[in-house]
Amino acid sequence: MKKILIITYYWPPAGGAGVQRWLKFSKYLAKLGYELHIFTVESPESPENDSSLLKDIPENITVIKQPIWEPMGFYKKFTGQKGNINASFLNENSTEVNNSLKQKISLFIRGNFFIPDAKMFWIKPSVKFLQKYISDNNIKTIITTGPPHSVNVIGLKLKKKLNIFWLADFRDPWTNIDFYRELKLTTWADKTHHKLEKKVLQTADKIVTIGETMKNEFVKITGKNNISVITNGYDSDDFFNYKKQKSDKFIIAHIGSINKDRNHESFYNAINLAIKANKEFEQKIQLIFVGKLDALVKEMLNKYELNSYTKIVKYLPHNKVVQYIFNADLLYLPINNTPNAKGILTGKFFEYLASKNPILAIGPTDGDIAKILKETNSGNIFDFNDIDGILDFISNFDKTKYSFDGIEKYSRKELTNLLVKLLNL
Image (cartoon, rainbow, N blue to C red; front, side, top):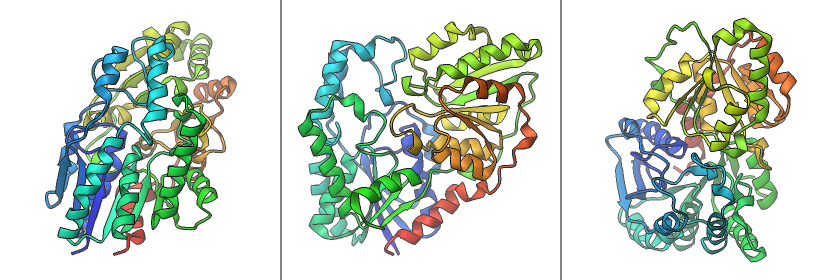
């Protein structure tokens, strides 16, 4: 039987976007007859837990969980933060946290002393354990997925020691990730990050990214043609039993977290103008946010007098989130206003596609999401400050204009078939 070792930091019951990509690949690889070995951590630091994802773990796979030491306890104690650490520097309770002296010191330490990331202490014990495990189980293929990119460094070291076939998956960039500029890097640390990233990219047998922009960036670094695109996607099984529930409201919904970089004032401004211009729209409009919101989002809702039209739902397990996607008339997709914006291609975008509800995106009109929106005729995208464009779109919204052409190729099953073609099996 064809054997694969998948090394991932995120695995159920951990929740969040980072879990689903390789959980779903594993689900469909197992159905194709592959013998899967999942190597992960005992207690990952994830934004939330989601036990609803456990149902997708195939029964006939081996999951190995190893302990990890992380400095998160020191970070929480130093900054006074409680509970799980939010991704992308999202702060729900205060707009001052990001600017506090303790936060700035913490970011400096994180970027300059924990390279490539705070999971670095998992690298050495994992390599030691996996050398023997791979040999004992006669495994010929390994897959690593990052971030955290410490996982890809584990792959790098195993490749050098065992000369095993290695596919490195990048769900997000490394030195071009949206928060890289927040890390307060010294020149030495910046060079070290870039050097390690290049070494991973040049050593892996195959590299997979989630979009064309990231692929092109990596080709410039390596000059090699072993880089492929396999996007995120949607699992048809997750959408099988859902239908839109009747409502007399015009629902604009956003699913997932909104941090400061994807909190676009143009959206709230346009909604406010639409309400003032059209009494019928005012009576019907309902904004629904499902997930964690930065305090800046709440400031915008106050500024543009939208609280009475807004429903905020805190984090929900994935199986409950899907109903909100189906209930929407229009799905809101804000893209981070960061240097890497053209290459951002979120997992929720493809679940939006699966619902066949039109999408209102705000971001680069020449980025990866813009191209798929056009290709599938599934919605419109507007530049970050295009208030007039957003207002016109909302005011003249017509769902019948959108046909969702060819979205089937973004199903997890079809994407797994693309993955199989890259494996050395």
